[in-house]
Amino acid sequence: MTGNDFAFLAWTSLFVLSMSEHRTAPRRVGLTYNPEHSGAESMAVELAGEISARGVEAWVSAGGDPAADPARLAASDLMICLGGDGTVLRCAHVATNTDTLILGVNLGRLGFLTELEGNEVRSRLGEILGEGGRIEVRAMIEASVSGTEATFHGLNEVVVGRATLSRAIQLAVDVDGVRIGDYRCDGVIVATATGSTAYALSVGGPILPPESRELVVVPVAPHLAAQHAVVLAGSESVKITLEPRQLAVLSVDGESDFTLREGDSVVVRASPHQARFLRFHPHSDFYLRMAARLGWHRPGGSASPL
Image 1 (spheres, rainbow, N blue to C red):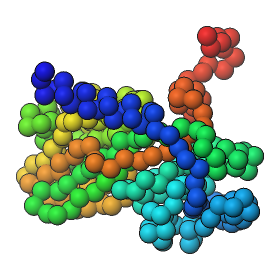
Image 2 (cartoon, rainbow, N blue to C red):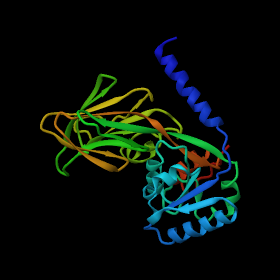
Image 3 (cartoon, helix red, strand yellow):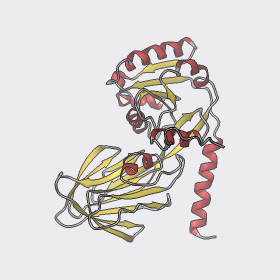
């Protein structure tokens, strides 16, 4: 059996484990919210009161920021995030290296990461506080900068992009030591399956199933080069190097900007951490939601699902 066979079996075992993981009723529930969304704070406070009335400990993050009390979050079995994908992302960052489940409640527009709509969360509190639903485990991504101790973890993507608006950058991209591209471009994205529906999608990248372990590499606006995405096995690493006289910025999930200078390299690989989401809808709901969000259905079309 080859090394690739062993890697495949390891990832397959992890996937099967995540699919079969049993959920127990939460004993402590935290609530976080988008403070810029009207009514989100009052909704969080009211939900916390209703949860406490059912005999489950509940708390609300100060100012809606899950990072305000990371120790309390880590001690919680479930975090309910009221907002949109950004709210869920912030919670996932703070929940890194914990077993805390995340339930996204959509109060925004897209809600690729959310599970319930704001108008249905109260009617489903019994399910939320019970043992039903399923646990969806999603891969995270890690980026480390050469010559430094800087390491970042994200759920969506790592981006090495130009530092100034009007000037492209020259980047070399290697996969497990093999050069796959020298790009003069606006940047290079390395995305997880979760991130495949975010920035990577907007520049023509493929959409991966949510629990896929693979990584997607997509150049952004490459000059005089085809804009092809590459899908990599989750065990492979990507090295992005700045050519001489270049200046760029490393960004993880749209945050954690880190200035890069000529000769710097960023190594991107699958993170040892994972994000765990509470789901009530079937796996196929991902495709239904994706088609609806992206407008793939022709208005007035007569085709019906099989």
